[in-house]
Length: 258
Image 1 (spheres, rainbow, N blue to C red):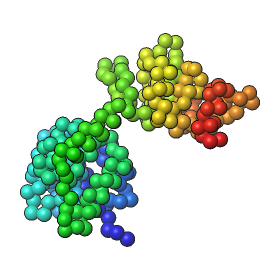
Image 2 (image 1 turned 135 degrees about the vertical axis):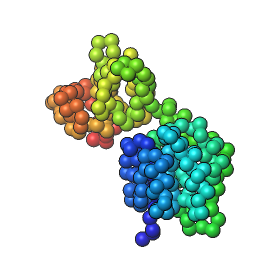
Image 3 (image 1 turned 90 degrees about the vertical axis):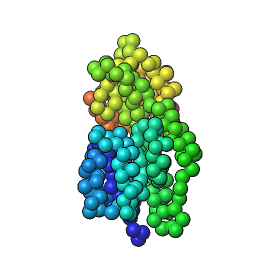
Image 4 (image 1 turned 180 degrees about the horizontal axis):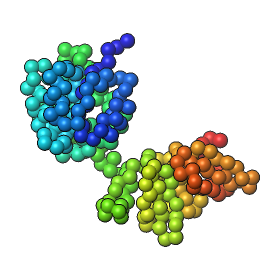
């Protein structure tokens, strides 16, 4: 069995560390976690990871500042930055960063980085990045992520939120508004069901009726009513009974190959 890559993950958001660990759990031995640059430096006094996955925007000392310190170590680990901001890419590669991964994490992208780490550990000819091409790729990834997300107004916080489609359970028309239900919140919007369907159709969403759009990934059961329509039981919001019209049922069943 191949030896696992050893890593320390540094991020001031524990949730992001947890997500990262789930993606790499079978491929990487996470030997240390830190929520700040200071905690990371303490770990590096006794641990020698193959790679340091390093967030950039952290309080007190940024990931870039920490990276500059680490590369001066006698035997520095490889450094891969992880950030939701593309604006630090040039600075990251100026300090010989192995890679620059844009949040939210995508498994395929993380695996590409791990391949680079593995290559450099096994080869006498380490991989070096062409800075311009990598930065162009980072920007493209960020644009794609922004385009995929759905902007909604958060009236309680008076901000605009960008919802990840995979976390949206369903949308339902209520008078003049359409309420969008995520895994743990709901947002009143002025989107139409048709506009949402067009925006989200590539993410597993289908109309249940003219007034409801549902994410099929959250459907637990479809119960036939005997007239060609179905009642949906969702993994979440079980108290919400959603009836799929006969015409929409045919399309959903066809999509599910049933």
